[in-house]
Length: 111
Image (tube, rainbow, N blue to C red; front, side):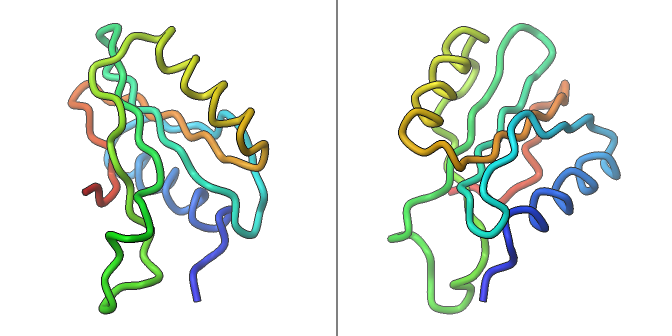
């Protein structure tokens, strides 16, 4: 059984802080199972955007892990804002977490 989105986001924010990065919840979604999106601001005018990975990539050994896919790399703020608007229009129960890290670390397993 997968942990709730609210619990995962809380732990993720603490993980970012522990590694020396700043993280904030920009949008709270459904507590139980809202999709989680991550914006990594590199503090140089560019950002990366991570979305939940497609279910097809999950393996039988770790079926409950949360995996992410980088869907935008080095994008400007306008592109990220537009992408967030599209995602929230499609599903209003999404979580958006913003991370500020000069090294561009996402602190998640990505594909």
